[in-house]
Image 1 (cartoon, protein in one colour):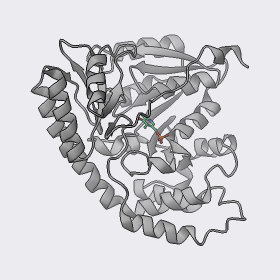
Image 2: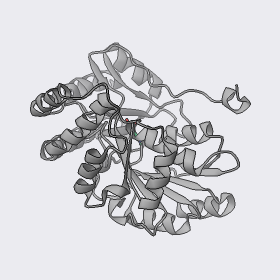
Image 3: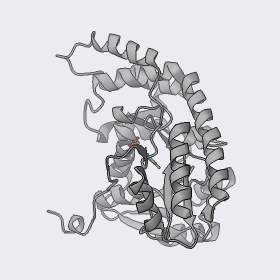
Image 4: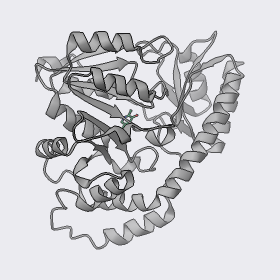
Amino acid sequence: MRDDLSALEGYHSPQVHVRVRLNTNESPFPPPAAWRDAFAAELSRVEWHRYPDRSATALREGIAALHGVRADQVFAANGSNEVLQTLLLTFAGPGRTVATFEPTYQLHGHIARLTGATVVEGERAADFTLDLAEVRRVLAAARPSVTFLCSPNNPTGLEEPEANVREVLSLSPGLLVVDEAYGQFASWSAMGMVHDELPMVVSRTFSKTWSMAGSRLGYLVGPSWLVAELDKVVLPYHLDAAKQIAGRLALQYADEMEARVQLVVTERDRLMAAMAAMPIDVFPSGANFVLFRPRGIAGRVVWQGLLDRSVLVRDCSSWPRLDDCLRVTIGTPDENDEFLTALSEVMR
Ligand SMILES: *Cc1c(COP(=O)(O)O)cnc(C)c1O
């Protein structure tokens, strides 16, 4: 086995059995019943003895229509994690450097290391905003082949202002990846910046807003030449027939998706206001989760206290730069009530 891999740790998110599971940023609502029926009907007509459409034409056309781009600007894969992996296999690898600004989504650096690339970690400011002087320093020193931004950023929840994304794009010597896994919750999207002449892509996922984490489907929008390169790198027939149908049909329920997003945003604002009334530092969020740091009590103790009440949140308290921080996913109104009740008990 490769020496560089033995030093790496895997990516873990404990799946404990609890009543209220608010730790992985999924949608708390299932997809519409009509989607389920349409999916089942189409599944029964699949020619299972044949390989699926290798280029997932109908799915890509549907995604392209959603964003007002061409299908040859869309690359889809098994979750946006596979989108990121394919990007990194194409643009990173041994002898190359990838830049992240921490704290951010752990898998950006993790997958980059798996390809054999060197990861350079820039630091965010203490309030987790992007420090442009630090960006300039890191990009000038490391000359990365790939630079990651994440907006809204996981696990902090902060949206990246448009001016920052434009500045990083102009400073980046290689490819800029803007991970918008939570894009629909945010006030703006970098999707409109994508252009065939610019070295940038925007990635999205069906796992969060589309209520389809069980299906593993994600995509990016980028320059058509880049999509053609990714099609060379990804395994043939990587998107199975069922997934292509699931994703294509989901797009017909965009209005229902937007309604779920609105409900989550309303609940998020309610939750944040209630938490701010407790001895807790709450970070601003443009996503479906909230990062918070209890004052006067260790984060790990609060996490355990919530778990004792059958409420599971993400324990970030031992992650670098996130001392005592926990991250809660917005659930259904009932789940959020249970969370708030448990939290106020623990904080008392
Ligand atoms: C959840 C998440 C993803 C990933 O998702 P898939 O389920 O692989 O599509 C990608 N990026 C960020 C920042 C995420 O939080």
